[in-house]
Length: 74
Image (cartoon, rainbow, N blue to C red):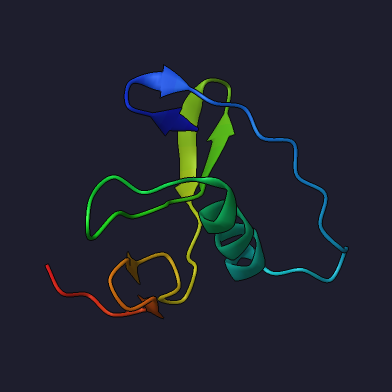
């Protein structure tokens, strides 16, 4: 994960039945956002290339002021 130009490594263990949204929500608790409408995206990388941007069904955006998720206010 990139934060302010530096790589930060997180080791995460979630239950087998967890969804992508669960992973994103967990990371939001570990990472401080510096921009009001910060966004996390999960990418699948294959042979050093982005293979797929994983769909999170609207849970990847978070409004820091009131903790509403899934609202696009840009």
